[in-house]
Image (cartoon, rainbow over all chains, first blue to last red; front, side):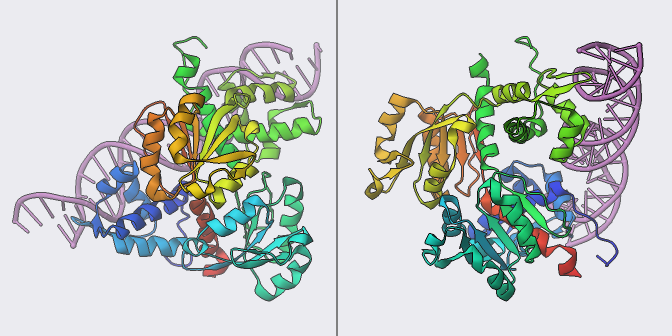
Length: 217
Length: 217
DNA sequence: TAGATTGTTAATCGATTAACAATC
DNA sequence: TAGATTGTTAATCGATTAACAATC
């Protein structure tokens, strides 16, 4: 609450927030007005205890004997996640994956605002993706000076990832959404990295099938 | 080891395996022959203790006084993850994201083999993605009967996800890689689901920026 | 052999669950 | 008011870390 007492929310809790936000949004869209921790737990395959603990990290959003008002929950968790912030975001690398992410993601729902796309291949310059013209990497510095984007999405080969990330930090980037198949390391404090490894994710399926009962019979 | 004593590996360990596999693969490619738990811990930002505990869930891959032979580790973890299995995989939904995943992912590195792409829009039928002709959903049953794919990648709108998933289970699918923005629920045992929520992932950045020290000054 | 490093047990830490008094 | 359900403390559970004997 006060300046000194930052309660330091645990990472386990933080990682659950977007999922809460999704389920709550769905319920609001369906017109549901209130929900108890027990009912929400049922829908999300969690325990009521955990839900109450999690929400109480941020404040007493519920009311005894009633439960939680869904609109209020949506608003509060939305604020915590910053979904209205519209952080200026740039995409680096307009290959297959980069273009799909640019066109597929509803950035405005996730607190982001895609304002620029760069690619090292100058032949791509000018062609439009998601309504934005692809720019050459050479224009990055002037663009960053003018726009000061805070988030960079990396859809580049792993060999280029670390070097480019360091450069982007020096240009003021504060957060990375990294699809480059390489865990970038940023020592600079206040810079946050989300390494997305789609390969790790699909391998979990291969693992599960390989180690399932019917396989090893 | 024996049929009765399945030691039941914890999920925390399993989720770390693909990352071990990546780092080990990188080191092998660089020609490194052996590594100690301490050195690997340093590279991966883990503790040596955790690495030894994790690896020992699967067997004694190391040697006292020496460390771990990297080729051996790569082989063993590869076997555990099933990276050579080449599970037959189909993609449902050839929109932006589906096409990008089909072309971008090296399925064979992850234990999978993409053998078919389906889309409900018949106008797309026949056009090629990643070397495969898009098929209409109406051909799914005969294709499944002939090929018996085990993994389905869902790149479809969330409204269609649950119903289609149920149908795919009835057609024999054993694992889902689900990008549909909806947590599908499969009650059928032996069917595994990996829900990928890219929105949740990017929201973590919005959260971090919103709650960082410089924002709340 | 001496040194290094594992495999493994024990100690700690943190996260989840249970319980219940507070209260709407 | 009585019933329901939260907020919160205490108990449990599981995962991580530390320690060290075994051994290459």
